[in-house]
Image 1: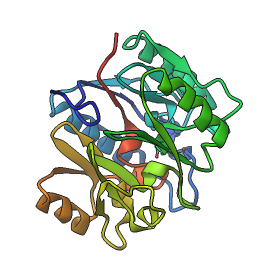
Image 2: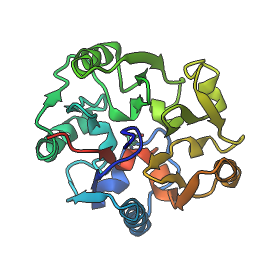
Image 3: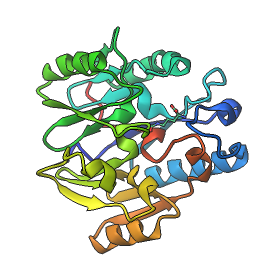
Image 4: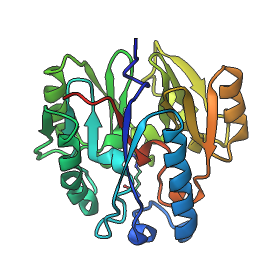
Length: 264
Ligand code: CIR
């Protein structure tokens, strides 16, 4: 049987706009090289497509420099999908831009109406529950509104906390299989993954934690050899994608796609 936590028939991505070089970032580590960013995005799309999934590539949105980080705009589940309400003011409009595409795949499409805020990067769906990390982008009211929606579809939701100074909960963790997470030691120290099997990123390789298990592969950012070797030794099929330019915008593997099985 298909496991809905990592086996996906579809994924939505969005082509980066030229304005992507002006995307949000916590600290300035240099202007992203647009050509490299585009080439990396192409490689990402190709890797997803190689697993047999249908990869939708939406057109660039110049008005929204961060719009290629589609993950933050929605949550796609088995019962339905939820349009998020991003906590970054410049990203609020991106969610509405995603809604029509989701409506093509889901008959039950809900929206976070507010006043709370929540971004998809703070949400990890595991085999047993939905974990949502409060962060600078996701507040208690946003988490509570989402909890009410997903309970209609039979999901348990647990609120957890993203470490101070970390953009999103999933900046520091990802799902490898329904009961196993890849996680940084600093997030694991909070105890939020007690009861799960945990694979730790190597020291100095914390940025490797934002990976995705997508069908038979684990996509991870290139440049973290010790973490990649750990995953390889554990039997995961690792595909490395250059992420140097997205990293300057605090983005990684999970941010660039919405992964789902349609529920029409
Ligand atoms: C932002 O600050 O919103 C973007 N520059 C990066 C978003 C990364 N998204 C994610 O981790 N899900």
